[in-house]
Length: 515
Image (tube, rainbow, N blue to C red; front, side, top):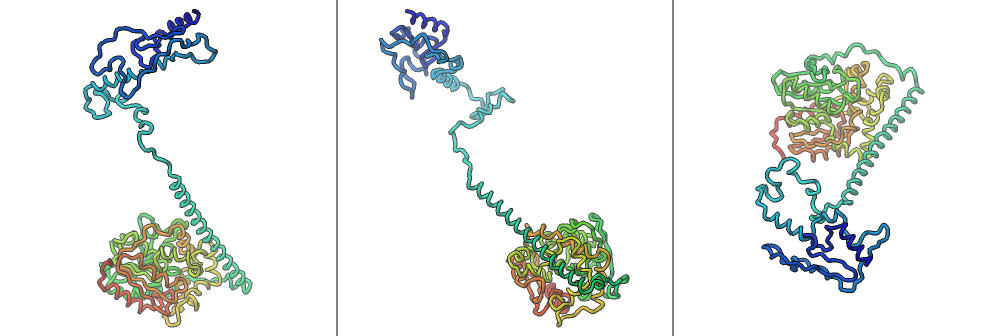
């Protein structure tokens, strides 16, 4: 009796509670709990409506409701332990959820709504703004509705390994550069100490050279001219031969040279061309910026483009030797519309040079001056000791100088070189050209699409001849390679007649684009 009263009291406190899983009007389908017996209330059922399941029928896909407990089953205790949930009772949140019957009624009501015209999933008409937009939870795809993007650890591992390989390669490259720089500096330092030990007075002696040699003012070579570039503000010096209005032939010298290294070509080609022999940035009478950042390859390429515009030309025949050949390659790659034909003397394609020097120790040794020039002020000092003996050695020694069978430099020619580079600060600009090369190579765009002639001296002490043969893979047009035996690095000065003849042949022949 006490248990029955406690159960009736609990039912009065929760009047809307229904034990059955099908919520409807309170009491429909409800199982009552009594003291020791369970009974189902019987009341008249309304007639079935269309689309609604008859009483006692089970929904599709669902089984029958659990059977009522048999008579004699023990009634639940009215007393419970503290903290334990009440059996047979639901929380307000659970009572607010619709049961299966409520969900079926909601689906039938939505199926009878008229279409909104917005397509599947469109908001009802009249809604706009935030009310028309589904919530973030509604926009999210249901769990398990589609394939999830799984992380690919192998792809991430490959990326990390690739980055690590590039970092290691860069570290090894710069370690090689700086170690070789230190080695070259040590060798030259030993030479300096040896020279000081033999004769300190002779080591630091310099002859005064106030007036240029007469050969630099030879009128047969052309007219000395100057042009100032608006963007950079630099004034460039050049010597021009030939009539204005003729096709332009632009000549770019190497190191340690200046416009005078093209004296034989100025006389030869002025009959049919407007020949311009330029002093590059920092050389000769051309302005020389102080900072090494002003000698990057981008600046040197822009100089040539601006000079062409200042001279009133849009195209030219471009010829370069040594470092001037490097610039000529870059002009042909970056501005092919500016070059009618390209002629390079004793310098390979820049990418060939970069790749070859890292794989062949012999070329690394021959190009030691590239590494030695990375050191500040010491290379300039070594060139100037013993009255510029190192400069004379480059042109006259048996290993690096002009060969015996060649057109050797006269005393006046050699004095012209020494005069130009003995001026205050005249060596810093030329050497600064090399102090940015390792940060600019290799090139991203490297194909040459214009007719190209490459002339090479077989006895070049600074460049191996194998690089000339590999260069052809970077030229997607007519390409001709001519190797002259028993000829040194100073090709256009040592064998001017042969070089001029080869250039004439290349300029006059009809070239067609190579497939």
